[in-house]
Amino acid sequence: MDQIEDKRIAILDATLRLISKNGFHGTAMSKVAKEAGVSAGIIYHYFAGKDDLMDELYKYIKRKFGLMINESFDQTQPLKIQIRQMLGVMIRYYIQRPLESTFLEQYTRSPYYNSEIDLETSQYYMPLLKCFQQAQQEMIIKDFPEPVVTALTLDVATSLAQRHAAGFLNLTDELIEQVIDACWEAIRQ
Image 1 (cartoon, rainbow, N blue to C red):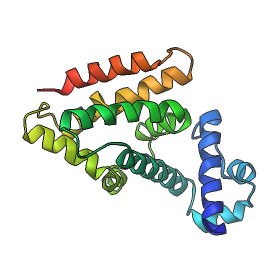
Image 2: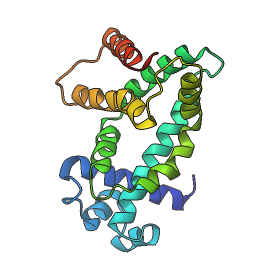
Image 3: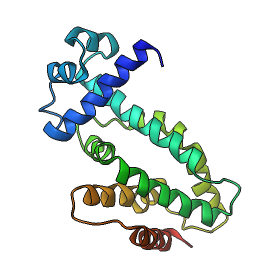
Image 4: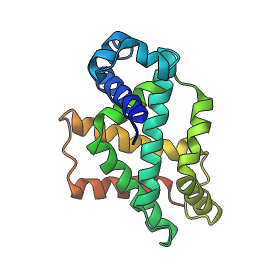
């Protein structure tokens, strides 16, 4: 990674940490600069303003998650196994990254949310989306609109990971498998 990309990522990571502590409104650009160890002016070299920074953080997290998902499941397996693998990967990913799961949830419920950005980031999830589409075509899973499938799978993973991180729930491997079973039952045909 070059120095420019290092600074950009340092700014994004600092923003994520600060939002987890202070929320969107309590995260001033000056605080981000201090947390990232850069000058306030350098932030504006990479991001047009706070709105742009929030949008770029969302894209950055979605891209990382998409790449990990695509590398983590075996597309040669039957669709049922692929979907179950993805559910397990999603839950474990967000357990290990509670700041990211919390940010994604906050962002999608905030004034920053822009559906065009979701369309832009959907490219990172093409194998996942194609898997669900093929499973619907083959009548393996219910013919729900994509947002319903997402709510019954990805949203469950992020929500449970947040509860785990907050100490309200202990997601053991056994419980994760039971959650995967429940998510599968919710979408299977």
